[in-house]
Image 1 (cartoon, rainbow, N blue to C red):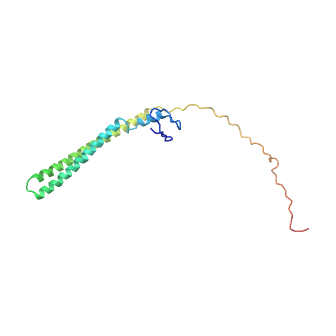
Image 2: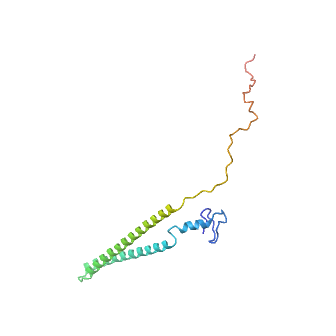
Image 3: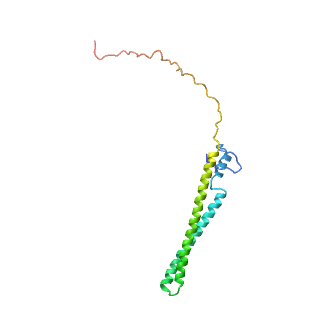
Amino acid sequence: MYCPNCGAPNKKRQNFCRYCGLHLSDIEKTFLDQSVFGAETERLKNLRNVRKLTDNAQLFSFLMLALGIIALVFSDTGIGKVLLTAGLLSFFLAQAVREIFGYFQRQNSQKNIRREMSNEAKQPEVKTKETNKLIDEKPFVPVPSMSENSTELLFVDRKSNVSE
């Protein structure tokens, strides 16, 4: 596990980062609440497998359609019609399965969003701890400077170019 604050590698058993001192168990709890871990990962894997299966079924149905058209053109037997109907049926069946799983996936994600929003609403507000009291502010009194009483302009004797 890497520290999200400084990027230093840490062991899973460590509670604090050795370099910056960040409390790692709180970070781990935060990451476990996200949907990329645990049971959600299994659901995502299953949905990906269904997606791959329907993609392969649709590819197979396109091949059957192509073979059906070729058989219909070059052959007098009824195999071309059978391949065409099987290809069309398998294509629409695979598309229907894909749409049904997409619908359930959207419903599941909407439920998860609602659940997360209700969990956020149920969480108590964070209470701040009282820290050390600040020093009382006194009116600003400037430090007297060494030239404070002598800020008047100094007159300089100038030599004039005009001779007297």
